[in-house]
Image 1: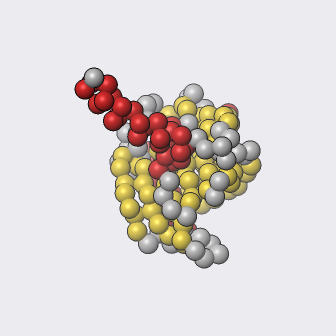
Image 2: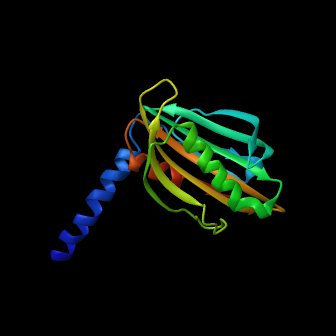
Image 3: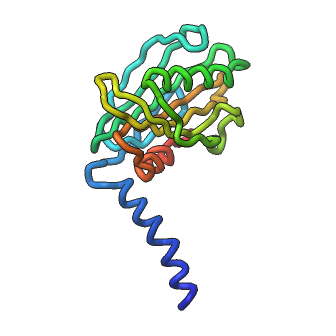
Length: 181
């Protein structure tokens, strides 16, 4: 009986976290990034965009997919790196630019993020930061940056959930849905 009670102590918090991440307002679906060899799971009908951005001094084609649901914005971006030897430097630049855009006042946490099949680069991280929305008001970003080799190219990835306050269970579900192909 003691073993059953111990199992329940571990099972109930995880079950509650999964239920929070899978609320009825979040209708999760798989979305393929064909050129990036990535499938993402988004909780709403995605919008796609492609644009040229300057990243680490180099104009780069950035592909994005994202949507808004249940008071959160979910987005995934990817690009093929013209200079693979600059992967770490470019990830750092990307993270710095993203945090500056939101006026990140502070980073609440930062840990390495290297899912299976990704490159073990120091700037591959998962973080939580607080800043300001473009129109005002506080925003929390729960974000990851990572890189991997796809065929003969190195690709960089960034996934983020923007919310008013941290929602770790939702972010956990979102980041767990990043499937390398």
